[in-house]
Amino acid sequence: MEQTQPKKKILYLITKSNWGGAQKYVYDLATNLPPESYESVVALGGDGELATRLKEASIRIITIKNLGRDIRISDDIGAFFEILKTIRREKPDILHINSSKAGIFGAIVGRLTMIPMIIFTAHGWAFNEARSNPTKKALTFFQWLTVMLCHRTICVSNKLVKEISKLPLVSTKVVRVYNGITTPLFIEKTEARNILMEKAPCLKEVSQDIWVGTIAELHTNKGYDIYAEAVSILSETDYFKTHSIRFVWIGEGEERNNLESFISLKKLSDRIALTGYASNAAQFLHAFDYFILPSRTEALGYVLIEAGLAQLPVIATAVGGIPEIIEDLQTGILIQPENPGEIAKAIGFIIDHPEEAQKMASNLHEKVSSQFSLEKMIAETELFYSRS
Image (cartoon, rainbow, N blue to C red; front, side, top):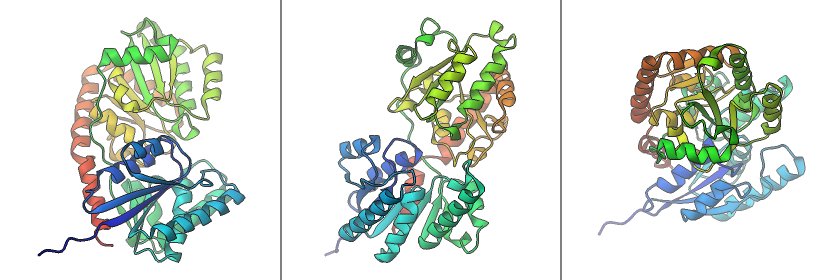
């Protein structure tokens, strides 16, 4: 009689429980691994949407109450010991850590408790964000240390691999595995627009206009302030006289007040619609005619894969792993970050050249369908799990 192999327990650890790219990644892995082979448990900070979705999917969660993104010494010390206690109690076969703070804490604790396999997924390097030089140096050291302490580091783009491989002794410890998704359940265009019109008064009675959409957290990393300046540039030309365009931004975050102030100052309230946070925001992509992601920094960008699956023409900044999805004038338009003039020109070009735009959208759809599937991501990740 054949002996069945015991299940491997995977403990996922992530700093925040809101719903972003890293959280979607953890959710997709935890809920799609074969249940006969793996038991998934997720430890996280907070009680956000990731926690809610995992509970609905019957995945056991553990709340690390002191774990948060901001640096607070007393909370961080508390979080470290909570993680230590959790790992000692759970005794996972695999510790899979995500995000910077959970990364360094998890890597240290994983080594102290002699976990057989510690995997870190880098969804971006904190040292790429706009920070002071001393802070960047400190973050670089801690991210290097995280990689050194882990048995394997998964980077979600080739760009991330190259950036960390410049540091000593880590090049053989990192590998690229692209994020993968299933095609979202898109809401039909008219219905999607009707729902979004209820969220933003300036969209009412303009449902036939051109809608240029964006889905991202209202955070400085996402470059919305530069995007708003680009819309302001367009408003000072004759372009708005000949084109009826609305810019629809789905997302919420700390930059909302600053963006609202700028929009009001430049009298753009009838052009830019802030619809706020939406659960499963990708379902609204068919409401848009075009999609823009103006990020200052981006590891890869789940939303660009989703926009590709929605067959939208895309404009995005040439940062991080974005050029691995968007090839300029082939699968979209690439622009330089923090350049509102380039955004304005790209918007004009993509709207005025519909045939070229649709060709790029078709190319993007073909590319993301073949290279960024959920099945491919899970299969490649499971190879590392099997080695524990």
